[in-house]
Length: 298
Image (cartoon, rainbow, N blue to C red; front, side):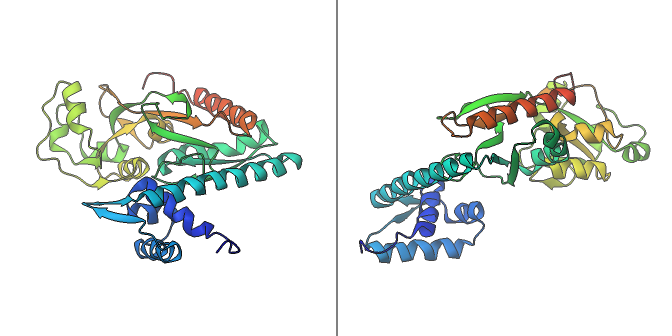
């Protein structure tokens, strides 16, 4: 067995499953099916003659053998990544891999043309995913995350403290001329999977609507698009709705706003070999934030 090449592709699946404790989430993170993950783990168990995962309730718990293999894979991947980084630096190439959720990518994407002028020696490869990148074994250099800013082993820089406020399209407002914060309860309300309507109503001194009528989405970008399409009133964040508001595609329904418990952060590892390029890129993103006026009141 010592002459055989280690099954690195399969070990990547095992390492991801060891972190996520779910074959379904592992499949989503790697772009494969639940069945493919299960078959890969089964082949590894046959290869090593060891049990690697055990089901406990809704989770797949890794055994000590699986954790040892996952640790070995991370160390090997780190060595290969450093060798790749050394080769790229010798060739003068600076390519950063950026991980972000789709809603933030939609704000950042149109601005990347300006980055070429400001940072002509840096290329950014944008990857969108709802799963958190670990920035260690997945090849990601910097991430844009929604959270509270504390991630072990990572450095974070606050991009923007978010506020949520209700908006709708001008056409929707024309169809509902009496719409204001006092009459919101009777209007179709667009929701996300994390529903902030009750908290916003409490902050505005209003009784929460019950029941809430309207469509529900699992992504902030889709929520904004639904409001632009006139499907109802949506609670939005500045970062996601800024361009639509500036273009007149959305209007505010109320001056009341609520601070979002989660902000948007730039996240990276200080020991990344491309740290200089990362810091220059982060400075550029912060400058774009200032250019967009996202530090101003919502």
